[in-house]
Length: 403
Length: 78
Image (cartoon, rainbow over all chains, first blue to last red; front, top):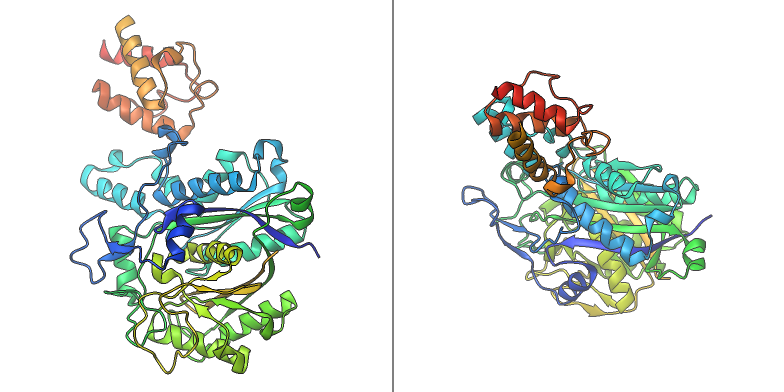
């Protein structure tokens, strides 16, 4: 079976735009959650978010920018980064052998909300004709494929907060099945808008204060915006062209809880099945795993059920293996979160570091895993799992290995 | 008409993020300026605002050249 290598990373996230800034900031365990400045959020229960500042999109023309929502712009910036990082010039590649695989949850609400306001205030002539192609979840895939002339097998995955990991898992399968030679895979999300924040707030999972996964005082997650896109290719072709290999994606698994429209199964049985499937697909035993990058939703049931799932699969080793939620630093990037976690974990593996769960204060006996509280920890990590979970009981797990 | 043509080239340049000198009278909106149908919708609304005129559906299409648009708008302005 073909081994799938990660040969480039692109990251636009609250801790940093570009891998250097992103890595420098997350390894220090800082918080990049701050009061929302894009609009007046004073009437909302949650008034904080992880926001991307200083987004440089100057390589894109104004003519193009006016047609796109922020989630597409961030995806295009991340794509430019990942291709440069991988040393790939798509002009020289067969466009039919390149694909785009992205996760997204909400679509382009900043654009859509503005146009809806204009519709009601000015009538139909007030609405930009580009709204039709700017707001929907697959818009970033379309813009990336048009911008780079990509014509291969591609897909956008809408699976709530598991979207990016699902998209990456799908892309891996496409490379393995030789349907594509290069896949640009990840996710993008721009939820810092009045309507998107309102929807997230009414769902009941948002925190009013710090984002504290696995902490007894946890009260939900905080939204964050950004995009993360990795370049995937067959290991043999990556080696033959002398590419830098960040790591290898060795397994993927997914499952549905089938219990509730929002809440996960309280015992984490669905997630446990997804973890087992992932380990089996990678050919790993539980003891082979050095680190787990958790979903860490910081909801009452989310963290307890995730802990139970890990214990069910890992047994007594569950209390030894580090399990952290670095998204406590950036906010939860929803349909992009799995890709951000992948990039963070790959960079951490390169440096021999485990990223922390920040804002951690109070132990919870029901979440008694080693969540690497507050500070990064030096540790060699050769094999890791990444977990993403979405509303409605969607579970996705990725296995990666240091090359 | 000459004034309208100059004004139109300025208008197109701003609209398409180009220089006025890059806008040739015979430039085809679709083939040379690479305008798609949604850009034509935006163009029509923008022209109506800029020149305070009303354009019917189909009066300007992406098969037109810049000079066709100059004539259509010029005729409306009398």
